[in-house]
Image 1 (spheres, rainbow, N blue to C red):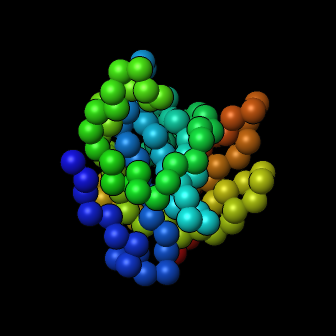
Image 2 (tube, rainbow, N blue to C red):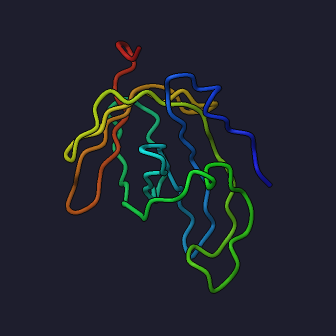
Length: 135
């Protein structure tokens, strides 16, 4: 099943998707549209919801843009085998994108507001920011 997630509905912003992935271990795949691909991370415990909360984000291979609307079953024996379901999707506004820090504002159906990602021991941390100035 595919949901309609169109970039034109995001205007000047880019798209994101959070996919619930029932593979070997339940986790969430977080993907940000950037330079014609989906930059991707596995989030073992999902996105943080309260300002200051931090969660682990493990980098995974980039995915093609067509994967932004994927829901279904990845067959046994294939990379990422298991059930994939869209947990949230929408647009995001990048504020800063550097090798050592990514800042953005999510405009999803469920997740909204400022997020910051920083490198952490070979992986990343994703931190829920303070939304007071998230415009």
